[in-house]
Image (cartoon, rainbow, N blue to C red):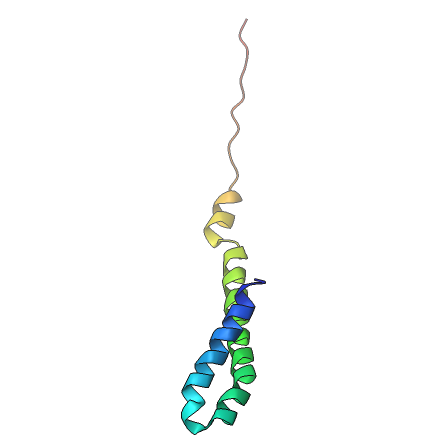
Length: 78
């Protein structure tokens, strides 16, 4: 995650700069940190949602794991 967030911030900054360049150089350059931060926020939310979905226990596993099992007794015949 250490590498992902700065890369996402740079990508978001460059995208906003490219989209706002027709409105002026100053506006395009000043918008870079804001849009970069917005992209990082979106990426962090997506990572959190993905991690929480992977960590959530499966309903099927819980149902099948709690079923009682029958034990068979072995008797020794002499």
